[in-house]
Image 1 (cartoon, one colour):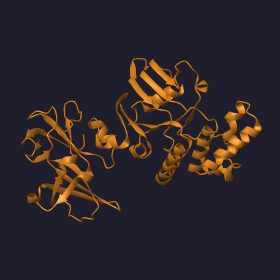
Image 2: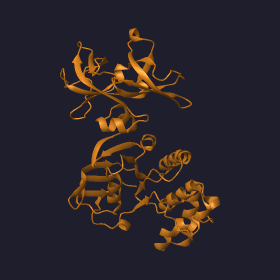
Image 3: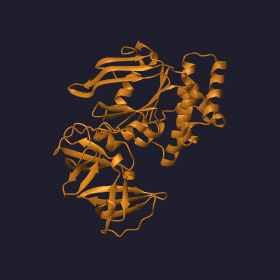
Image 4: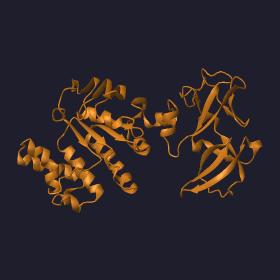
Length: 369
């Protein structure tokens, strides 16, 4: 396997800039997930690594070799697409062995390779079937097997689970992660699904408008988002946001004054001045329902109760803004009634409204920084 280095990589289509100076180092054996909304440039970056898109400027290296001018077949990588792209007239074994046959690999070696990979992927009993006789998950495993038998330096996955139903996607996420641990393969995985990113990645690369917004472990990205985009994109249910102005109460406490005059206490943040426009971010699990105002709660109007089985989402409005609250209880508040909600001060995120960047706590020993 091999490391991948991307240095100031840019991609333009005529006058349209798609990628704006991408810098990224992927370690040997690492599982990297490129995540972001449609049109953010993640698939374009993957295709540039694969050699399916030319690089406008910059450099991409695989195992220390600059591959800008190399054809895809000469880069020693394997790609698994959203479309299974299996030959319908060939059996599972023939689909998996096709690339090896083109290389004129000895039949004995092909047979051994197919048998080994089929056992890993649970395809041994299906080797004689054709794609039309397989389920969606089985077809995707065949597509992965076709990549694995080549023993490439790196695997590239372009939204490989998009065509599967929710339960099968969950199963295949687990299978791909187990496969990665077993093979120790360098892998770059593209998805717009933040759940896939959180559950599969060693590191997440969050992208937006052709720019890397943040690189970090799933926990780091979730707990310490670099900006409002990352905070809003990563997390399900999504983070709640409220706009207000910054106030300083004392050396250990500050607050965000909302448009309706309510004050939410926060830890003092670095580089924030009184009166500065601030966007407060709070994840649904960091907001609790309390008894009354004396318990530190703010009055919020109930809009919807959304039972989810194990948990419940309570939709309310506060200062005219929608707020979601995650609770393990099963409340049954009437719509349009008022409840009191409280924010976990240690878990609140504070963003500069103008730059949208997260402002870390000024003195946050042991707390999210």
